[in-house]
Image (tube, rainbow, N blue to C red; front, top):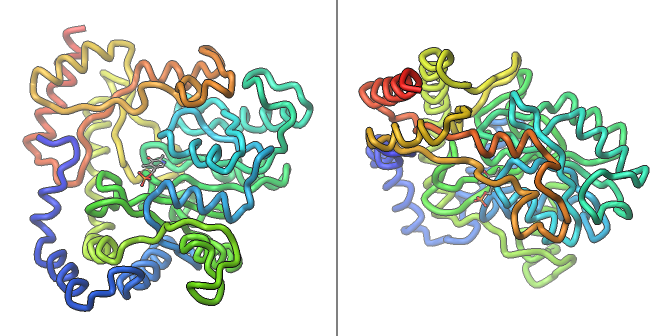
Length: 381
Ligand SMILES: *Cc1c(COP(=O)(O)O)cnc(C)c1O
């Protein structure tokens, strides 16, 4: 049994994927070939956004989103400590400062009330933690849709408008999810997603994309991903990056896109099965009304994590821990002067969460095996 089984998906799509790859090998346009444009159109239509700008990976998608908003030294960008390093890393790469906000203990996403409080404190120069915040200018928010569940964008967008901040949706895990009838990628100013192989829509290597309805921002990001080019390649109007998506990855993603909606449904079915079988023995994921998760991960919470992990390991069931250490306690961010205890909800979650195998091709037999093992571990507690 695999934690994420990419081989079974390949078996399903083999002829389509090989046909797409062969087409690229024949036409030879490996950089910005026709598949890149086709994928951007298809993805924009999928999420309902006017523009899709593909790029080299999810981290570059976040970076381009911040560059399009002219994030610079002295700016504060508010985000969650319960995420992958890339979310906060890109803020620092532009010389700005991540300002962490604790999570909602039910959804594991940024807590909107705490967000508003933190913005107010920073404006008043009375920040409780993070030693270097008092001279910063509030600039924007990166909300993360952790495990595939969209953050609370009704509240986040309202707060952003009130304080004149931008909102970037880190949708690396949530492509395929939705928020009050709108698809992820079309709920805020800009959304950044990833095609890392294990994400809901994964390629065979790195890839990413940005979505926006803003024409100017889209054209700036198209320029930024190609060294800040102007009207042609050797006319450079801004400092950019080499951040293009390979044509081969676009071709592979086009083949996988054919079954993407079906796979999201299969993930939702698996999550439903897990939740109804396990909700009485462990804390299962909470999905608020009006939200649909893309189920990048199915994560459960318990005060007896070691017991469950050992029991599952004994039955050869793979598990993973996302995220074992919240970002404010990572060595890379020690210079921000946060301390243990600053974000108790994220810290508690990091010590009590783990993820079960989640992918569309988990067999009925494997599902039963996993559910039985968790139930047995619970009974033995
Ligand atoms: C995977 C991920 C990223 C980064 O994506 P890459 O394609 O690996 O660069 C960013 N944010 C979150 C929340 C992720 O899960």
